Amino acid sequence: MIDPSELAFFVQIVKEGTLSGAARELGVTPAAVSKRLTRLEEAVGVPLLNRTTRRLSVTDAGELYYANALRILAELEDLERLLSQDRAAPKGLLRVNAPLGFGRTYITPIVSNFVKRYPEVEVQLQLSDHPLSLVDESYDIGIRFGDVPDARVIATKIADNRRLVCAAPSYLKQHGVPRVPNDLARFNCIVLRQNDAAYGTWRFTKGRQTETVKVRGTLSSNDGEVALNWALDGHGLLLRAEWDIAKYLRSGRLQIVLEDYATPSADIHAIYPEKHKLSPKVKVFVEFLATSFQGPAGTKPASAW
Image 1 (cartoon, helix red, strand yellow):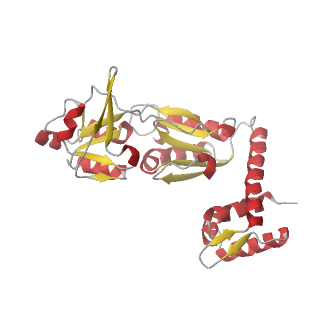
Image 2 (cartoon, helix red, strand yellow; image 1 turned 180 degrees about the vertical axis):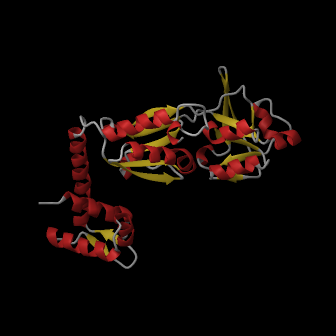
Image 3 (cartoon, one colour; image 1 turned 60 degrees about the horizontal axis):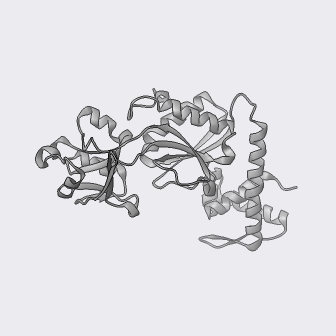
């Protein structure tokens, strides 16, 4: 009979791509992983992986084993979820993906408090520069900003989050204040390159009118924290989410401009695959997130105090 733990073991190796990578995730030595893999191949009677000094490649039999391992593990997880729906306390592994800077500042303390309240839940938090596919990467929950285009997931809004144009008072004192979006053409704008399709494009709405402005500047970055620090240093105007800059607005280090104009929302959502909507650990964690983010933007989450 096939052991589900061996299925999960093989899936981990394929996802990591190397024995050493799998060993790090499993907390064992590469030699131990190699021996276990050899025993698995002997048990199934066919080679599952081709080994080289640098990389592993999956054999035809390995591809078949991997695809069915993913299916069987998902079915077992569904069964466990159905059986655990009526349990009072959630338990098991919860895999969460969140943006890098936001995750460090806000999600990390929430996770800390969550596991104190629900000690039978093991949380694996993955912070990344770019959103990961929950379905393809097998994550239970993702934290996302703005619209959620993936129809394969359910989205629950956990906090409002406006995008605001701001600058350091020193910059505005020296260069003036833009009154309408088209004024931005004569200002130095700090631009994020996180989405090349919309690079340097800021959209503004007032009433029924919407206008798009192509902004330029001497500084750009794919890192939001870097761009924020440049704005704090007085290098120009920045379009940034309210939760990222609220504490600087309160302290006076940044000042909002073009307040009469709305920009595309950056509302914070918890997203999860349809199949997880009845999972107790997912349901409780999403509720915990929503409660933690109650209060003014940029304040420390309630659960982190």
